[in-house]
Length: 260
Image (cartoon, rainbow, N blue to C red; front, side, top):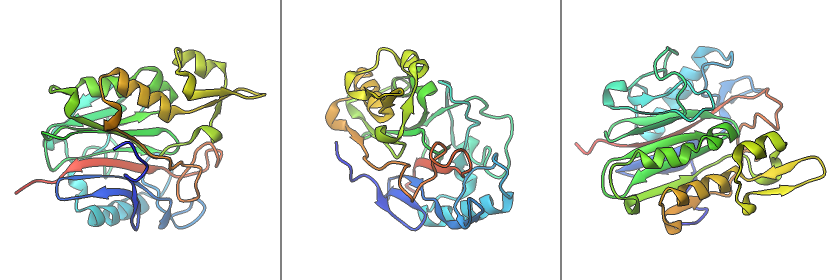
């Protein structure tokens, strides 16, 4: 599974869907949002017309066969908090934001018919699922969440054998486009030598690699970890850093369809 082929290109997202497991990451183009125009923003909190976001939700829902009322979205704060959700949480923060699931950057569930979702624009989505039961998880791993070991924490929420888990480290900013200062490196210390490289002005940091090592540290076999080479620096995706904050947000998602 350690390859770059987990994400296939669809109309409004890059990802994979099957009768059992669906996961993906939405594209930038093909919507109604002004970022700068006809973009597929999926966030309610950045000043976009709420009708645009709702329209995009319905478009994606039809493509992946998960109605928005089955989606769950936390209020992310770039931290390390993780919560378990169930089918009863469906619709949380989807049509309008609330105070539910506040300050949460990791979700997991054992229920089918639930789509775990979060917003991104450079940070790393980490998808986790079991090959033997219905466990699915999603983490929002920016450098702050990574410093709090959010990937390792999410994996450790699983009640079964780590040998049964599969980890996909998804679309996020790649090392060559992500320069950070000593504050970030110090927060992440110890950093694997393969994860960063010094430049004249700072450090190029590979957050994907750091989270891969966290998964290994948590007990996931290397052959059960997939790291995509696709980065948000590509034109198909929103990048907060490269677009200097004037950008929309993608939606990463993972869930299992009901079998009935």
